[in-house]
Length: 219
Image 1 (cartoon, helix red, strand yellow):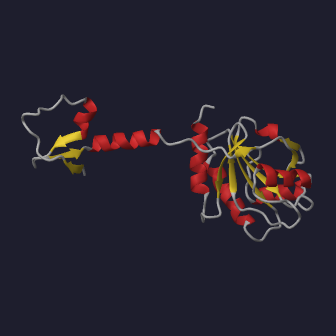
Image 2 (cartoon, helix red, strand yellow):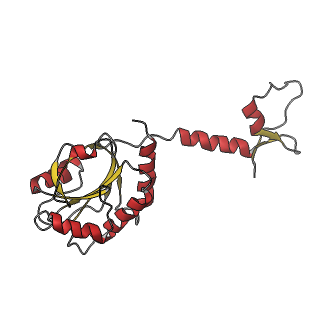
Image 3 (spheres, helix red, strand yellow):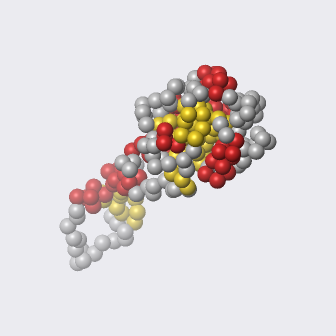
């Protein structure tokens, strides 16, 4: 339905300037004198213009170089993610609290981005002493992690703690096993572009939408 607004009576002496194409589409004279209606064409035009002006995702920080070990037992470093869009979280395999839910949500993200070859998922362990590569490999199988797509990382506790505390700004890897339940979106340049969770029951819908936004970016 067209949205109408009142212009009041129009004087014949004033005259009207010729209408542009957009104005012609925008304004349909109704039978009732003194009213104009916004046409559906113009409403669609406004919606498209609003979408095109949507601001870029903010930049919260940058992920530095790191050296860890993946569930395959192979070294995994920050350069492995160069040019990739990736999602990070912090979990541990013996967790009976939020970790199973978080990994199930990460699996949902994995399914949603299956047609985006440059997207990676990275789960960092907050229990590196117990979460050995073989333990992480079993956990990866449990959540149907695709090899080469979803990585589970363990290694030096100090490295993990520095990443958690100073890079991702989520918490500490200090042996307490307390950890954030948030997901972090990182772009192709290693910049943090979003945090998801805590105040959302299921943050995956917005996370997936923002992954796709980054995938459309050219730089």
